[in-house]
Amino acid sequence: MQQYQEIIRNGLWKNNPGLVQLLGLCPLLATSSSLTNALGLGFATILVLAATNGVISLFRQHIPNEIRIPVFVMVIASVVTAIELLMNAYTYALYQSLGIFIPLIVTNCIVIGRAEAFASKNAVLPSVFDGLMMGTGFCAVLATLGAIREILGQGTLFDGADLLFGPWATVLRIELYQADSHFLLAILPPGAFLVLGCLIAAKNAIEAKRQASRQQKTSIQRARVTQVSSN
Amino acid sequence: MLKFVSKNALLLGFAAVACVAVIAGVNQLTAPRISVQAQAQKISMLKEVLPSGHQDDALLENCLSVHAIDAFGVAPTQLYRTLVAGQPVYISETVAPDGYSGNINLLAAIGADGTVLGVRTIAHKETPGLGDKIEVKRHPWILSFAGKQVESVDDKRWAVKKDGGEFDQFTGATITPRAVVGAVKRAALYIKAHPELANQTAGCPAA
Image (cartoon, rainbow over all chains, first blue to last red; front, side, top):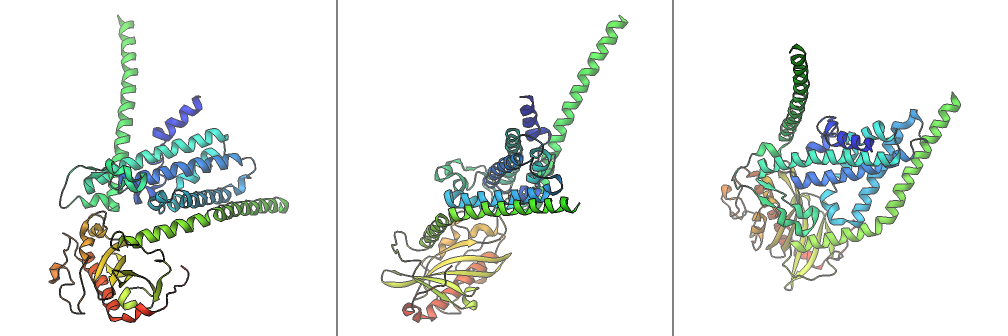
């Protein structure tokens, strides 16, 4: 149980692929121009990470150490291709909006990173769970980034959500403000770097604050101890 | 040593064969469904530029392959022929090569007399927030083509307002609408100048 808690904490916060490991910047920055796109790539990444981690963990005892990297690459490429074909055939509307992102996942270093760091050393269930959590952490960062950039750059949220979730999702679209010229920089690639930088800084600030309060607590206790003894 | 290397090589080869087998299997399984889906998608896209309620079950079969890079920006290009109110109408896949950042792929339904029925943007790389207003889901601008007719090569109305024409430009983006207007105009002029397209036997190389 503790192992699973550790996996959750690592994936979502402590070792977050987007904010700490900084793996997968290519798709992260390319597709986070709107919340809908970000969620699309996020969901696809969760699926791929869980599937590749599972497959690699299943065969981990049969893959010799020397050739593990090429085998991982082949497994990842095959799984991504298979998922792409299946989505194309059975969820065509979803494929229409996610299609261009799915091949991008192959370039996401987090997939091979987790295969190497976790799935090749752990049992199937924790590996799949690690994939899910790492994917969720990545998806959360991606969605935050997408939401901030969409608000700044377009003044909307969930624009085009119907392409991802179906026609009912048009009600999700929120027009926050109407302006003739929006903050264009937020939508262009440099905006992605700037916003991601701010997110990382915010995460570090929260972390530092926590650390400080933890230290303060211990130092206060120590002070009390000396006070008691001196009285 | 040699034994060790050859064992790894064999294993690697085996893994490659297994991966390819999985992909081939999935491909075999999904190929028919994918082609059905792609056809349905194409028909619904073609219907977008036609008047609503238009019925033509053989739309995709009634296809002409045309070599005219000056008119359509690509060669060969596909023209889908149909009848609207008894008059031949051609849906052309045309390209505006002079967008702000590269090609803009368009779909335009044009009558034999040079009247445009509808235009849609299929793919483009224009600046988000400025040039991307040529997408119908972002701005109704592209709908302003419907009903406009090209008279001749020097038809003054077929330009953006900045150049003295009838079409709006966008704040901060003139090049993009100028490119789209130009591409639709060239396609319409070609169709107007080639009435023999109506009698040509249909046939496109399998796409």
